[in-house]
Image (cartoon, rainbow, N blue to C red; front, top):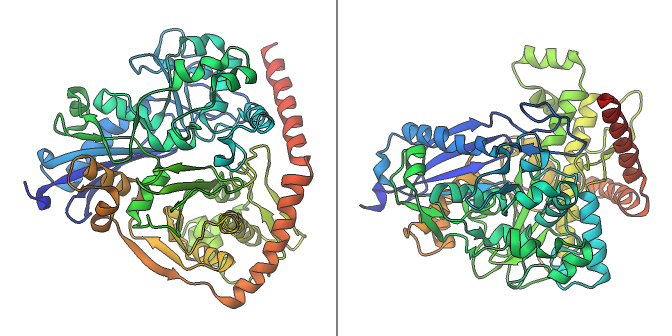
Length: 560
């Protein structure tokens, strides 16, 4: 079979849906795609079935929704491509991280076990489950006090989103669920387990979200000092053989072949993360190229030739993006989510009516109005912490802020200020890398937000970097397909496959010096607020605490 006759499937598991993409191995041509929405979406208020109320900052999912993507989206994508399924030589997946599944020894999720469907901790904890912030705080404090050698590899702080914080939350909050659980598994690895019957931990999530550095996790002594009895967490619940990115995890099982309609035994690649697989898709795996994958949140990834300690980064991992280089990661917890929140909560009906009359979405309508303004004309500056701060403060107790509002402030003013705030947040991250000896020379953007030209130009002006665009609307799925081709043996490594299968448009948006100078002044105001509320004052944390206590009282009263 020639390369022209060979195809691979990439499956991108996002926050609300999964997307399958059929790609030609020879040149990366995208031939067919299909999307399947998760039936339960994100569970933030009440459990399905019982209706049990959840506390604030929870975000759960149902693992069978992920299986349904394999059953529905993959066959639909192959049908849309119009290819013979027997010509597919491999499949690869990517996932949001850190999304954790508590399972039995055979991979069965706990929420599917009799008697556990009404237990919140038996469900998937999505990446944006932030209720483990107290546990993350204790991990950080103890690690700093003990001068744990792994802590600087994460910029001095680990996140409430990660494996250990969420695992400790489970250990302390529901010991029956914790004890019943045999494995604490990244969804990125669980879905591969479902496909090939082999549980292999991928090097990416193990290194970033699993605090695995130089072959080791945090020690038993550290974990017991953190909480007596938690010392066996790694050995009993977490540790598993590590697979390199692009390696073959196993062959497609008969059951998974029946789900997907693909040939039994084809290569199933080691799992990966949506952000990290996108770098090869954008042909951005060389040092100096930062990839910003912009969606509900933004993840920033890039490669470097040596290890550096960058304040507030999400981690630096040997081979975390491609083998032979140090992969760096940072991120912003809320970007598209913030814009969506504003549209849903803060825009008068008259604007929606005008958008309908113009035949555009409310996002497009506000963008068009905001684009008419000069930089700084709205007189506002905002903090983009509506979902906390992932980098560089690593604090999900922080919250959003808007300064400068008057009775003359209009919705388009606030909307533009929020667009700019996310660009300022990215500039803080880039500055942290630059100041730490990790040069950033190009910003490559992927994700649905690339369709907003005003937002993209703001990012170029704020960061003073040339901005390139991934030339595909399916960045993570294309990146997964590249890894599937490597796992199937069609290419020797990921960078080589990326040269043939990846695609990018270089220098689409270039910084304008006049606008950039004004943004420099606004950025100074952003930094002042950033340091005041993020470092000097605990106002936002206190407000979160007051809110949490009030919600707890209401929930208790509801059960009386």
